[in-house]
Image (tube, rainbow, N blue to C red):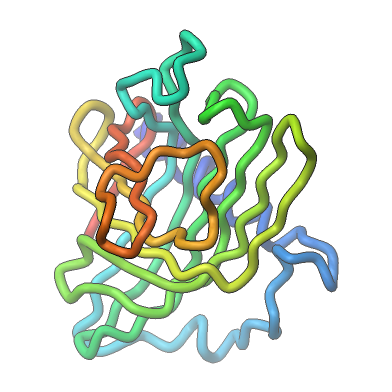
Length: 192
C-alpha cells in the first residue's frame, strides 16, 4: 500500500510539473484539455501508468557515477492505437545523466501499442549543461516499458533524433536516438 501511494505521488508530481508550466512556456499545454475528453472512456482500452526512479546500471559518461532518471507517465491506449496521456522524464538532482545539470523530456502521448508495452508522441526537450541551455521542440519519442516494480520493470526512451549532445546512441544506424534500457530502482509500472 505504501509503495502504491509513493508511486502515485511520484506520477502526480511529474504530471504536475507539466500542468504548472507558464503560458507560452515550452512545457505548457498547447491547448486546454477538455474535461469531457479526459473523462470519456475508450472502448477496449489499455491503461499504462508509471512513476519512479531508474538506473542505467552503468556510468555512461565516465564521471564515476551510475546514471539514472526520474519519470512519470499515464496513458490510455485504444484498440486502434490512438492514445491520450502524458510522459515526463527528468534527469536532475540526484539522478546524474551524461554530465548534464538537467535534461527534461515532456510531451503528450498520442499513439500506443495495443498491449501497452510501448507508446509515442512528440516532446519538448530542455537540456541545461555546462555550455548553457538548449530547447528542442516537437521531437518524436517512443517509450518501451516492462511492467513491475524495482529491479523488474524497465523503461527505454527512443527517437530523440534532434538531441545529439554528449549522449550515447545504443542502436546506431537506425536513424533514431536510442537511450540504454533503464531498470526501476523505486516506483512501479503497470499495464491494465
